[in-house]
Amino acid sequence: MQTKSHSNPNLIMIGLLLGGFVGMFSETALNIALPQLEQQLHVNTGTIQWLVTGYLLMVGIVLPLSSMLTKHFTTRQLIIFALCDFIVGAIVSALANGFAMLLVGRMIQGIATGLILPLIFIVLLAIYPPQKRGAAMGLVGLVIMFAPALGPTLAGLILGALSWHWIFWLFVPLLAIALIITLIFMENVSEVTKPKVDILSIILSTIGFGGLVVGASLAGDRGWGNPMVLIALLVGIVFLYFYCHRQLHLDTPILNLRAFSFKKFSVGTSLVMIDFGIIMSSMYLLPMYWQKGLVVPVALTGILMLPGGIINAIVSATSGRLFDNYGAKYLTRIGFALTFVGALMLIFTTTHSAYWYVVLAHIILMIGAPLAMSPAQTYGLNALRGPVAADGSTILNTLQQILGALATAIATSLLGIGQAASHATGSTAFVHGIHYGFWFTLALSVLGFFLSMLVSNKPEKSIDPLAEKRAAEAAQQAPAEEN
Image (tube, rainbow, N blue to C red; front, side, top):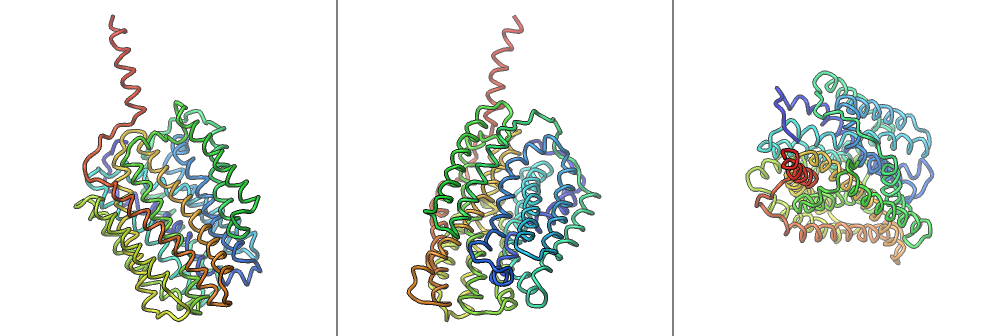
């Protein structure tokens, strides 16, 4: 993807980043309200988690299609539609009087986030030169990392004074501002070519990614050995296999999976997936631990989550500039080492843990996760050039959201297993279950740390394999045409 000159790229990004911030904020804002919603909507923990995973399910279904959509619609059209769609979803959720209507509103919002997230990276790669992308990616880090961390804090303060409906009413003015800014400043950065749409690929993608998320989500309520869970997971895996096989053999794939031929992109994407899994699992478990394990009121829970959110914002804003100066090698390793320490501290919590201890563990997590996230993203995307670069950002965001949904579902399942395995009752049993969930967070940290050992600061040859193949074919045909 070639970078064009723009008078003020920061103004172009403001509306998009604000929309992305609301989208990512929405992923965790309800976490702190889940215990309250269970009682008010008369559903159990396995069902209520669908408000999180159902949202991520729609994100995961729409994201793989975003690269194709950018070839059929202008950048402005897609962003404007996404913001309007999000406003509609927020209003539906705010007016909801039951679980079904609230879930529908959440899923409508998921469609918007699935469109906005990859567009952030597509626009960024188009308007910023390579030497400035690290700092720009740090700004994006405020969206990707700070918003999910801030969600429980603001939601807790809202719930302390108002009802959960006001969480969604808060979205509406923010999205309206983003829409106005977009209408004024947004420019089209992608070329509309309108290639032939492969309907079969869309079907395979939707059922494949959807099957994985639905299977993992059902497991949180029914257990991993349940026939419905196993069938959903098997269908998801089979359809994804055929989807990937088809993308690798199409001349114009919906998602150019040839990006994985670059080692740096593969490693960077894997690190981002793991890092986001750490964030989503911990941000799902921690608010519930505060409320059900330590019996902390919801408003105070939001305040206690705030120090970690502030630290997250600071590290997210600076990690991109650190990448420009030091590369991703040591930043990713230090980041995952710190997430390991934070997760380990949370495993040793009890029903009587000191507030300062839990806050400190959260802060350490919120230093480590963003310290690794932005460098890993930039490391992976900088390995790509040409048309495959746009597909790279879509792949990265798709897999990140899919793993976020899976991590939330797995954490829910482990929470239930831990509670069932406990010989105690009440808050003690709940904390026992929470520990099972944090063991999963710890395992992701270990996996991320060892994978970060593959990160290198040495430059890698960056050529789109498909473009290279076509160039070679053209070179062979040229002598024949001359003769």
